[in-house]
Amino acid sequence: MHGDLAGALRFHPLVLVLAPLFSLALGKAFVDYVRGPSAAPARSHVPAWWTGRPGYALAGGLFVLVLGVWALRFAGYFGGPVPVVSYHEWHAHHVPTALTR
Image 1 (tube, helix red, strand yellow):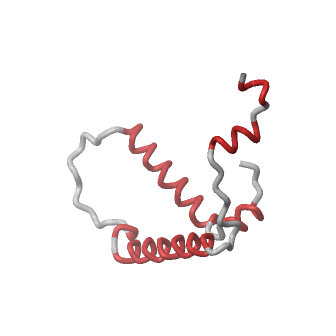
Image 2 (cartoon, helix red, strand yellow):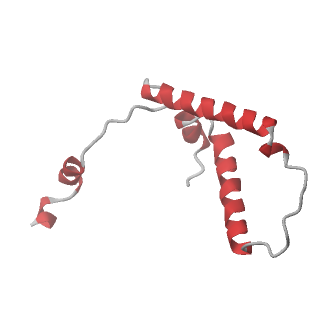
Image 3 (cartoon, one colour):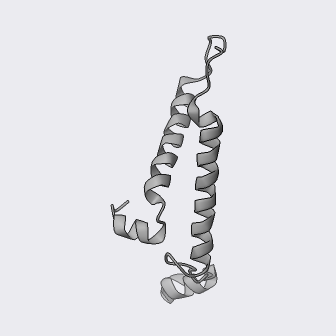
């Protein structure tokens, strides 16, 4: 984490949407885990907006946008595609030969 917003936006233009959503989801899962199961009986209540049609529509739209960004990365935009290097090639390039003997 270096705080390079320009670099983050260059590689994934949805970073300002996805990073906070991921952090909130992870935080909620952590809090729910620490709290443990509820001893009170389940209450019937009105579901939150994100569990209804608007939430599913937003999640579906975001999913399509993320897939679109990855398709564009595959086509060469947003810093992709990155050449794949095998571990053997990486090791030969980065580890001095004196250490391998």
